[in-house]
Image: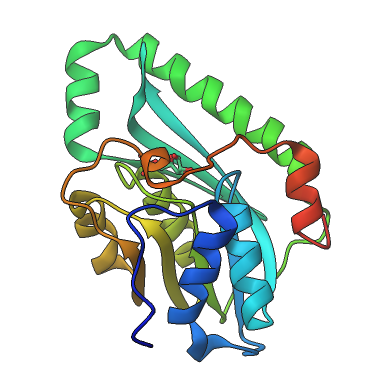
Length: 222
Ligand SMILES: O=P(O)(O)OC[C@H]1O[C@@H](O)[C@H](O)[C@@H]1O
């Protein structure tokens, strides 16, 4: 690490965050066995910049959070899909309280809607070419973690898909989420580990939503 490689308290935008993470991922530069997957949508600019800086391939991984009815900031689970594989990962404590507070039918409906949204997302933003991950080093990039549900689903998916090595690269992650994810992966790279965490967006000056055309412009084969 160079002396000037000190994380800011917030990043200008997702691309700047990706450039910062790329410095810590230098050992994978030009490695033909490594690729970067950006979690849709916000992880894609982060992944694209890592891939550009390191000369790696980049693809997208479709994810959808399952959130508490009327509390969209609280995820009790997340879905992830890549190629033939799909995974659904629950956050234990939150899922328990969701089951206590809501009828099964209500939670089933959340899952059904999330599955539909995931398919819709895939039909719009996942290309016909899906880069192979079996036996490779997969760098999973997102713009940040909150509960960790989304990243947990992505990690489980990559294990199922036969990734040889899984590296998580995120600009920001609260301690609790990190504790869930780090033991399951080969390497965990995180720029900002805040003591107080309210939302991923608080760690960016610009945190715009990304249109389809912006995602497509970042990933050459989409
Ligand atoms: O699944 P958790 O960690 O709760 O939420 C993280 C997701 O929420 C969004 O802000 C980020 O883009 C990330 O994909």
